Length: 138
Image (cartoon, rainbow, N blue to C red; front, side, top):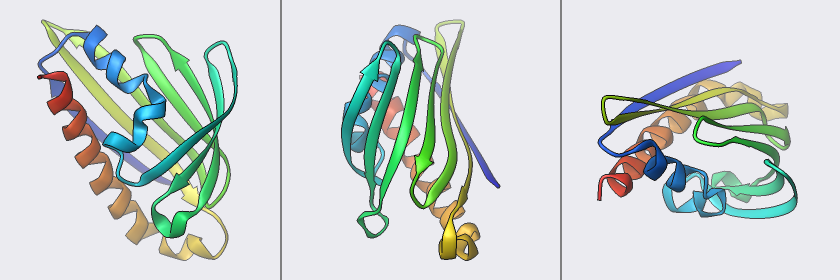
């Protein structure tokens, strides 16, 4: 399994950061590796969706669980990525800390490219976190 963790401090309220990250239909705006999101079903705070990723327009299925103002857990259930991406928020002294953690592996023949793709995902995560920070601090 490849693990990645990226953390950013944001000069904005927890409410403002949550408003941005919990709008998961808007994910492609911040996450350049996500081309398209199509919701399949929703049951309370659990959304099943199909995500088209930038790598060769591959489609992955996800189960996303929203824990309001605390955490978003996206489990990859089918596709070339197996594992999860978790975003957590916490607040201290009028600053919100946003952490994105990946725990994933590639499936099939793509497994041999895990190192290269891990670096690509880390870079994309850093860029997404910076974009979220900029949006929240406006």
